[in-house]
Length: 510
Image 1 (cartoon, rainbow, N blue to C red):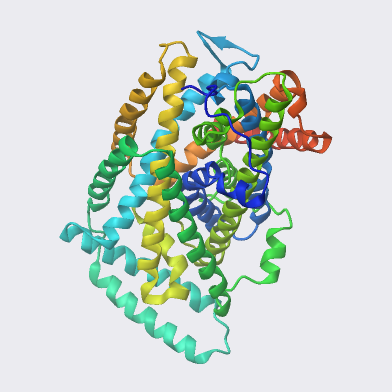
Image 2 (cartoon, rainbow, N blue to C red; image 1 turned 90 degrees about the horizontal axis):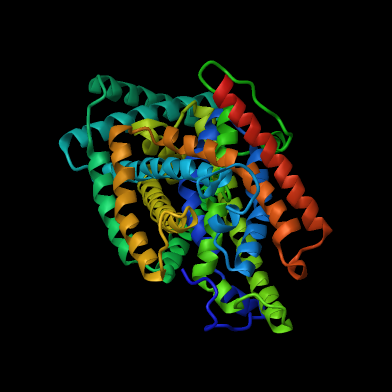
């Protein structure tokens, strides 16, 4: 990959409109995280912890941006990819890779498995919308009745006693749903989600082999923005329903730095910290972001590093565009994450519903039922398909690029530009096929996603340490930010360290 060729050098825009026309990598990043981090992991945390971890969710979205920008600043200005730069961080080495590169390799495997959970979620959404078999139709009826019954029972419990008319309707609804549920008797066995996952994987392969940066960019922006708007509208409309409304006291509770007590069935802190690894900019996305910046053209437009004032002006200009891109994307996915978390806490948490396994999508669709009624499932299924397929497609596009670069970084081969492109296209076929096979053998989307989230959270302190090393030992002094920025880099590193050590200890020793 020719990172900083001499041709194509150009000055950065200085107007706000010019800057906005040149952003884009951040929205690709948002497209790769909204599905797994926001839609699935965040709502699961809300279901387990209620409103108590709202503070952690907001903190997780904001704190990583400092590391994201600093890593991108170093790679874009130096002309090195993320993996090549990280391989220069001091520490133990095996063969041609250091400790961070080999941990990334283990994470890479987990992320492919995570994408199996993602495409399984898309398959579930499609199997609900368009079941392919009679068994699939019966299974949908079973799960939908079960979820509706649990939501109605929870709403009856939370409904104000003064609304007698609503109480009578809920009682009648519960009686009807209970009678319907009793006639079904047992859970039907169906494989429609796996069939659909296979079909959608083939579509993703075609897009990965054919797609380029501009297509990926437009695809992500459309998918993410559409469902984000629907979700925010849903959250605000929920305020008209007494049983599900989010009150000021709920928000205050969520911002009070509470840590809910674990139970035999639930470990909300462990779930929340695993979610921390993938909400906002996850560890994998932090490494992937500079690749999208380079593919957008920021590095090429700056040109090879030299001591000239013209290079410095270009570098400062395009790094400013990159920062607009990163902060703008942060605003989008933070609002989206908060909306999903509040929905999960308000409806799933109060109903005692946990999104998991083959009932994942049906359970999540309950978050839209109070507002959209009979149309809730259709609204949610469109959104779930949009963000989950977007995540599956974009995450594997990024991992294909990282894996191709790793071949060079680890010295397995010396690939030129044309050879790298062939490897990326080959991985665009292989990685989705592996991911869907994992889901077919182990259909537990939430577990696959949270496991990768845990590994990404453990990666965060490694990346925090790395950017500090770049900041003090490698970066061009002319491009360094001020002391306040340094304080935030240290603060984010310490926060990452505490969370990563806690998760590692929890997983290994408890």
